[in-house]
Every structure is written in C-alpha cells, then in structure tokens.
Length: 245
Ligand code: 13P
Image 1: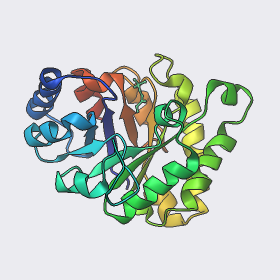
Image 2 (image 1 turned 90 degrees about the vertical axis):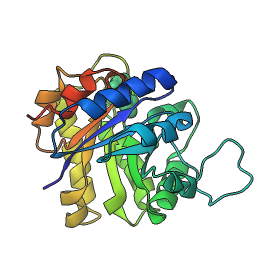
Image 3 (image 1 turned 180 degrees about the horizontal axis):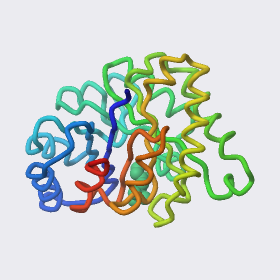
C-alpha cells in the first residue's frame, strides 16, 4: 500500500516568528502516524525549521540546482541540502515553470540530478485553465511526464503532485471526480514505466486543498495525499494531515 503523503508548500511566505509558530503547532499536534509529512519553507528558513521541527517530519526545499557546486549565483545544491538534513525538494512547481520559465527539460534534469544524489523529489505537473477547456489536460500532463521519463530512472524517490494551475491559490478546487480522473490517467501512464512504479508511486493532489475538501478527495483510489499551499501556513494544516482519521 502507498503511504499517504501530505506536503506543505509555504512558497515565498512567512517570517522567523510566523514560521516558528507553524513549527511549534506541528510539534505539539497529535498527527496521524500513517501519514508521511514534509514541509517546504523558503530556502532562508530551511535550517531554522529543521532545527526546531520534531523528528519524523521531513523538510523540503522548494527548488534545487542540477550541478554539484560552483559559480551558480543564487542557487542551492543537492549536497548542501543533504548536509543540512533537508531530504526532499519540490521541483517543477507551476509557479517556477510559468514565472521563472523552467522548461519540462530543465525540471527533468533537476529531478534526475536530485534523485541520483539521494534527494526525494515532489515533482509537480498540471494544466492551465485554457488547456483544460481545450480538452488537453491529459496531453499536457503526459508531455510533462514524458520529459521526466526521458531523464529519470529512479522512480522510488519521486512523488508526483498533480496541481491544476486554475486551482492553485484560487479557492477553486478540482472536483473529486476531476482530480481522480487525472490521477488515474497518470497512474495508467506510469504503467508504461512499469507495474511496480505505477503501483508504488504516490500521486498527490494540489490546488486549494483545505480542511473542508480534503476528506472527500482523500477517499479517491488514486489520490495518495496532498501538496498544500495556503492552508499549510495555518493551524488547519493539522486537520488536513489527519483527514483520514
Ligand atoms: P494552494 O493550496 O494555496 O492553492 O497552493 C497549492 C500549491 O501550489 C501547492 O504547491
């Protein structure tokens, strides 16, 4: 069985004091032991979070570079993350794809480098509203997956996050059926890699997940967890982690 996975993506939000508050809240909460939990604060606060957060919850970067070290101003390396006990990274978030112009190939290259060097990757995909309305959702997600498959061989370190762009930060959550349909299509696509990869890879839903809509979504057969943005900054994040209790 796939272990349920809940990630919190803080994006470019928070301060020392507000992030300490989130950490304290998680530290004192009673959390479902059957859930793998990973939080992704801004890079500046990774060490602070790792130092104060209880063990058993992992910490992720929101991005990482695909070179070992050197003259890459502004970037952070995989070995620097591992040196700091940061064991995961998000890659290919739609905000990085659209605002920072990361291509499918760049995201795949970073995913390859990170997985080959021992980091877990929360790899994001998803379509725009225009693409959905044109009936291109599965084609868009498949193209993103193909680019990943062209470079990555160790799928055991990959968690997929399906995040329809029109549902991110909009309060417009995908219906459980819309989400399940795409998750099922992703799982079917993964069967082309291998049955093992299809059966074992967690597929998370992201996009306006909150404490009210998480319960129904979590019951879908191909939804193995969530990547939570805005709500991960609030106490309600605990309710999302515990949504199956
Ligand atoms: P929201 O939960 O704020 O919609 O963000 C989703 C997201 O982008 C998580 O990576």
